[in-house]
Image (cartoon, rainbow, N blue to C red; front, side):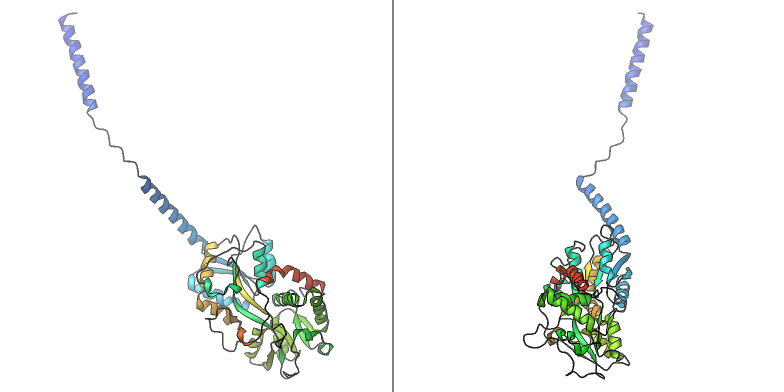
Length: 373
């Protein structure tokens, strides 16, 4: 190989080495340090929290309430809830059909909260797996005897079965003093009762079954049905009819008596708390309350409602419109409303009403008193 060619090859080799060296010295961008596991978890938690908060805000926009209570007793309460929380309420005032509606919607739940005028109905729904356990703030203010074992329902106000009478037509001394006396022929056509499916009637008959047994209770229902002057839709109809003198007396819940006293006319009425004598069973007590529907579509709103309703001012509001007696002894009753401690009461635990609720409805029908008019 000649000298010139060697010099050329050597120069090319040197140039290649220089280029490689130069390229090797070029710095590449530094890789980002991988995020620590802790930082990743924090970011994920923050993202989940934001998602949950957004979902909660969306969910708590409304509350669906089914109610079996008189609409006039519920509307002011629900309006106050909306004013206090900003949560819009969609009420369904379904009367005694509210229970069957909740049962029919099992698997496709529409209601969040059930406001009931009968503890038996609430406990029956719980036993069928249609209410959800809860632990709302303030639940300890309600005695254990007046709430479900899992707090899926709790009572807020009590009512007692009484005989309200028109003082222009009869004196207190002349009035019957026991429920059993309603079968006496001398009272034929003198009094009014509700249809058999009324929640107060179902609870009352359940207590009579507990006291007398089924056969005597069926006989009593049949005889009272034939003896009554009228079978009306509800207790409001009875109190107005008695106040107007259309009937001498009627079988109602005690707060209807207090309501009639407040009427501007037709208010000359009195009340008998029955079965107060020695050895007698005492007056039958039931209660109104609220239940958390299982799989409620607006569960966050429902929880807000349960916490809210247990605040003292709202417990009072629950009983205020109807003049019922608050279950919580710390809540002062509306002026003129009697308290449970003033009279002898039947000792059947309210929770047992749910166990016999369906059976009692069947027994009432078998005895000939229609559940609906």
